Length: 179
Image 1: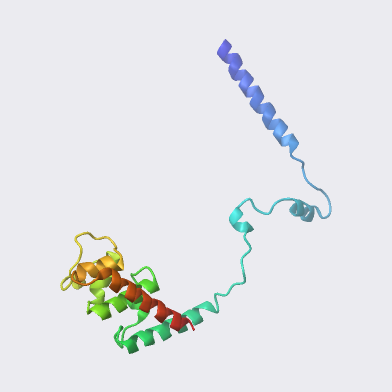
Image 2 (image 1 turned 135 degrees about the vertical axis):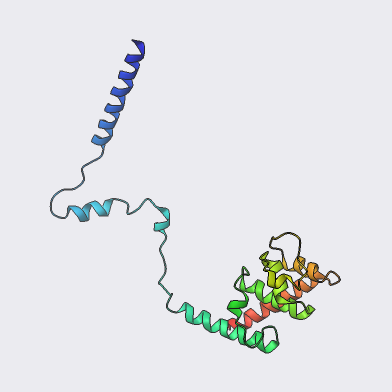
């Protein structure tokens, strides 16, 4: 009997709180212009992402500028002998995280006489059977830093200094391609 009264009491409280909550909400403006009045007082969205104002859409300008930058950088790297004449920078760097890391790997491979595909395989952790035939790879299939990849492929080289040198050369190339 006591349990029944508790259940009934909880049900009555639930119904009364629901009714009071609905009564507390005003029905909003009515009549002519009600839609505009309701929208002016109510928040547009509770999603904070939508509160951020977005700038003008520059998607029509960016691809051309980026394409020109890629073409300039590709031709610059081909002149330096880092990329073959028929190679494209976008294709060569497709599996590497960033363009700066890819250009640094190209420089490191050129400076030390390392195969770029072997270096790329160690940097990304993605090893294909065609690349692995002539490469020294780490036993694990995980991405590694440029200095570690250099050390794996050429243990007698000063990997940290060579990686820093390659990163500086890449920074200079990318800076020159932007201007």
